[in-house]
Length: 407
Image (cartoon, rainbow, N blue to C red; front, side):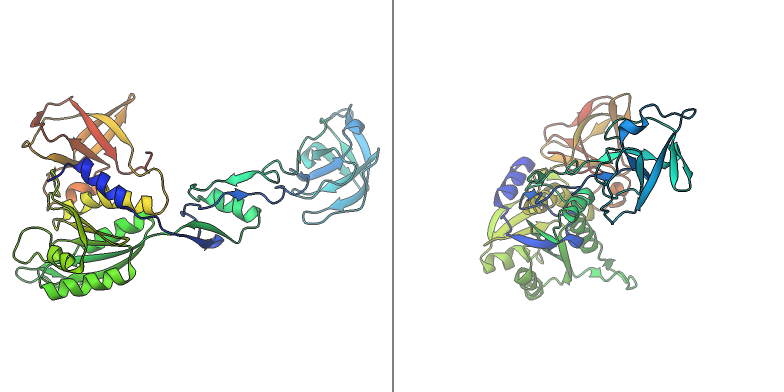
C-alpha cells in the first residue's frame, strides 16, 4: 500500500490535458479560459452620462446653489441609445439620460434632483466640477487591455466582460466526460422495494452528483452485476465515450470483485491498488491511453471520501484549474479521539470558528457504511497514520469541504 499523498501525486501526474474548445457565451460560465481576452475597443466606447440630468458647461454653474440658481436654455433632449448633433455652448444645456453619449461641448452632468425644470429652461441648484457624473470612454476596459487571462475561471462577471467586448464565444478548456458505474448483485434501483439481501444503489447517484459539482459532464451508466461479462460490458461502454471512468465496488479481494481483472484484460495500466487510509483502503487507479479510471471502494463513506480526495482534484486539473485542493485549517478537537495505528484516517467533522480559532467535532458515529456521518459535516479531519490517541484541545488539520479550492 502507498500513502495518500503518494496516491494523489500519481493521479495528478497522470492527468492529461484536454484540447481547448470554443464555448458559446451563454454556456461558458464555470469554464477555464484557454486564451487571453483582449479588448478590441474601449469599454464604454464613448463618454456617457452616469446620471439622469443635464449636460452643460461647468463654467456656467460655478456660482450655482439653492439660493443662487443658474438658469440655462434647454436646446435638446438626449435619451440613451441616441446621439445628437447639437452642441452645448455657454448658457445652454441638454437634458440627458443615464448611458447616453455626452454631447459635444458639455463637460459635466448635473443630476436631475439638483435642478429645477422651467419649460424650455432649467435652473441649476449646485456647482459641480468638470467631468463630474461623466463615465469616460475606456474607463472600464481601454482598447488593447487584457480583460481576462488564459487560466482564469469564467465567473458571471467575466461573462459580462466577454459580452461587452463582443465575444459570442471564447476558447476554453474542455470539461471532462465522466462515466459512473456501480457494481454488485446486492444493488437494486432506488424505486424498487427492498427484498432480503438487497440494498438500494446510492453510490452511483452520489458520485454522479459529486462529478457534476466539479463541473464535469457526467453519464451514470447504472450497475454492473457480479459477473465478469457484465462488468466488462459497462466498462467498455464507459470507455467508448468518457475521459474518466469511476466505478464503485468490485475492487477488493472478494470472489466477485472483477473490476481489476476486466481492466487488466483491456490493457489498462494499474498505477496503484491499496492506500494506507481509512476509509478507502482498496482504492485503485488505472490509465488507459489518455483515459483515467478510478476504482472506488463500495462502502458509501469510502466512496464519497475517495472521490473528494482523489477524483475531484483530477477532474479540476483536467478542466484547467490551478487550485485543486480545499482550504486547510488547524482546528482543536472538542473531545478525545482514538484510532488504530498504521493508516491515515479521514473523519467527517463539524467545524466552528470563534475568536480566530477553529474547533472540530466528529460528526456522529463513524464507519465506512454510515453515510449520514458526512451529511452534516463541513470538514474532513486528517489524523496521521502513526497517531493512536488525541486529547480534547489537541490540534489537527481539517479540510473545509464547503469552500472552493484555494491551492
